[in-house]
Amino acid sequence: MQTVRAGADDTNNSPTVARPRVQLGDLPAELKDNIAQQCHAADVPLKEYINDMTRRAPDSPPTVASLQSIGDLHGRSISALYAVSKEWKATCAPYRFEVISAPKAGKAFFILVICPLYGRHFIKADLDTFASKGIVELVKALPMLPNLRSFTLNGVALKAIFVTANRRIQSWPSFEQVLQFTRPATLLSKLQLQIDNENVVTDLWQILRTTPRLRHPHMDLVAFGRRHEPLDLQILVDTKSTSIVPLSTITLEFAEMLPNTGAFLALFSPSLRTVTVKYHPSSEPAIEEQSGLPDCILPELQSLNQSAVANAQRSHVDSPASTAHAIAAEHDNLDNVKLSHPYARLDSRSGQADDAADDTAPSRHRTEMLNLPSAYPLLTWEEPEFLVQYFNREDELVVQQRTLDYVDNLLEAGMQWRTRAILTGGRVGLTRLAGAVQPLANQRMLHEM
Image (cartoon, rainbow, N blue to C red; front, side, top):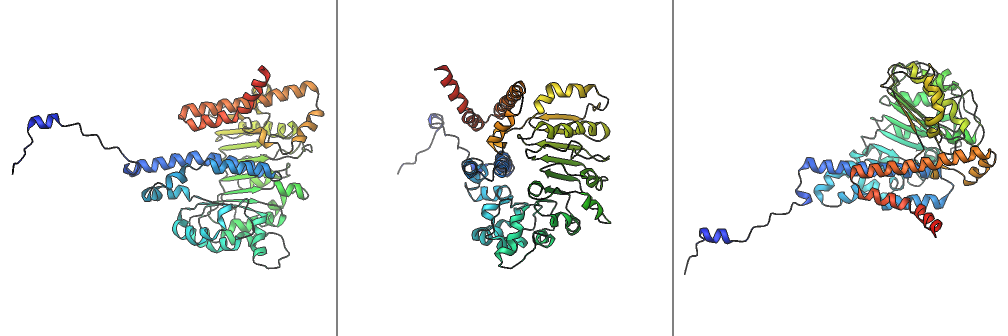
């Protein structure tokens, strides 16, 4: 039996050993977590846009179905990464199970499997479109969700607590129904309520007393303003609590300007840092003397945001825009003022020139004044025929100018999309942009034929 010894020549002549390929599961834990964060950051904006567009088109089933199909096809990066292996499941779980969405919240699988295993990861409950079925089961599962910090509720979800339980309750949604959600969430810091009844509004002080960690109430009064008589926030001023919760952020959404909004915001002036006001006006003309923005000094105010949907008439946004500039001049700590409405581009070219020379215009260089056009104006028109009726009432030259501004807004949004895709190196972003402008390419081909 011969013993074969490898000599120096044998070693030098041996084939080069291939470097082992690094597998996805071999990456360091810190790098894995960074990848999961980036995937999550890419998914969230798309989901937020889809949810916002869906809420703006409740009476258009084809539009809602189309938006939901887009959500099913895209924005699932973190879910795909979660399915790679057990190690990636542990890394991605805090991001994949961050938000409780309405379609899954009342399902038996969610209550019996997801909540016990991953309940500690959920920090936000978005029940904006929650159906009545399963609402009671979700309430029972809340103790398994100890870290919830943010709720989004609507009147339908609140009433469903009792409807599903087959209890004959004749009253509208009230404070006790809100508590069904807020009591188990001891860390709740943000609460969004879509209010269509005055009872919930008047019980706001009790809600704040029972949620000591709450710092950001978001009150959506759009449905209330369209179905009932205008709400006067003076009712909250008159019934204010003896000890005011130190809120840092307030978001208000209106269908029309509400009286005494400034007086209501003034109650939180010692601690209020961010004020956001969103308008969803009807075709009725706005009350010129009501701006919906604070008319008082808020010493800690750092950010002021005002926006209006694309079908807002010019008269709805002129007064708030000028008021925002005046507020910027009066608050020393204000770092950011953001105006987002359909006429922002027009303002930045002509309307704001006069304001710049006015003494009330902000003189501090560190104050950021942003005029942002609506990102998706085509999808924010509530009724297409409203556009035609509105244009028919306008002078032809005015219609032409506004149409050009409308087209400019779209083109600018597209160029910003292109810039972001190039900077991030995202091929997916460019592909989606190409799909979005395909109708324009079709029109160009028809024109050139």
